[in-house]
Length: 419
Image (cartoon, rainbow, N blue to C red; front, side):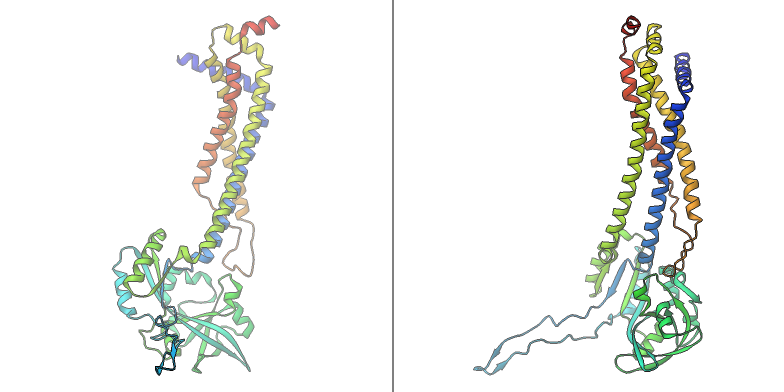
């Protein structure tokens, strides 16, 4: 049995080398398809990861906050005869955007095993005072260390040191676009005013650039204490608690649970970024579709080449069957030829795909909107290489299976008689 298998492989090898130009063309087709499949997926998923990072790195998995809502108890009746007057359009009551019992909530979150960490935040609407002009702005008061740990804050600070927000009293990190409008430099002192007229001088210790130009025109960052001082609020005053989970998929369930437990509004990341995630999914589907189409086209090329090879080798097939080789043996010969082309072409395709991807990752990618990105993004996920070689083998197997089945049914008597 072993001898017969070895003989089948020797015959397959001879047929491959006899028409080596066609074999080379088929192998090159598979190599090209796998290379483009790997390169396309690596680049597109790398681009997706880059775009996801811009949004998701700075987005909490669950956000606790208090949205200002109209009073749920509204009366709109007016009865002059009875002397009753019901007032309508009753305005919101309570503490506005402040989260009640924020300290207790933070302590509770530390004991939840699903929570990776939580960062308190105070959002303050302000005006940047620039000469006689007031520019709209938003100061995000943050716990600097928690913001860096959970949301990679330092990655977006393009000038200055993020920790200076904690170490320097009354300091601010301006959005890069806002700083350019104000002609502010690191070390300058700017004045901000709240809508209630409270003013504070803040020292610029750095610039922040998120990659979203509209946000960078208004957003800036200060420490939690500085922002609370600006607003004239106590240290317990917090408008948001941004939560990162160990498993992002749990965000909708956790948000629903926290909404009831803490009597606050809770928004999960899937709801907040539904449209963005849809765009990423569509780009990935397109990448896979194009890559698989390339492999299928290569499979048709191998099918045509094997068909021609069988047509040319009718005499050889007839002799093989006349000397005792069965139809299954003939099928194994041509299937082996197809798999040899697929495996060799696929392995070279993986190698060239890796090299092309690496080459792309070295190309400079300089843009003012993405300061942290220096080269084109590439994702070297081993999954792509596994999918590529498996699909290469499957495609070439079926490309060889149908012609080999045709060859296995050839009647040697008909071939010899025809000659």
